[in-house]
Length: 66
Image 1 (cartoon, rainbow, N blue to C red):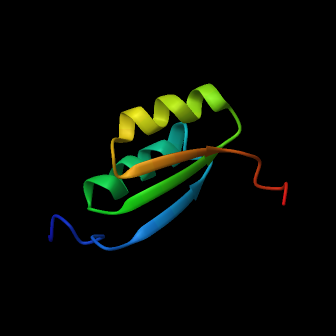
Image 2 (cartoon, rainbow, N blue to C red):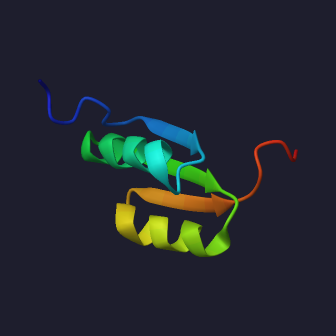
């Protein structure tokens, strides 16, 4: 399997600061994607951004709030 099959892709993952969302974000970064995760907790967003590295950004917000 190609190790960077998501290279040149940008993904947004709602609920990506814990659980399955965080696992998905980690897997996508490992496959070469740039990832934006959205979570409700600012502290979790900061920790997630650090954990995922330079190919990730985390934004605090709620998916139902335009």
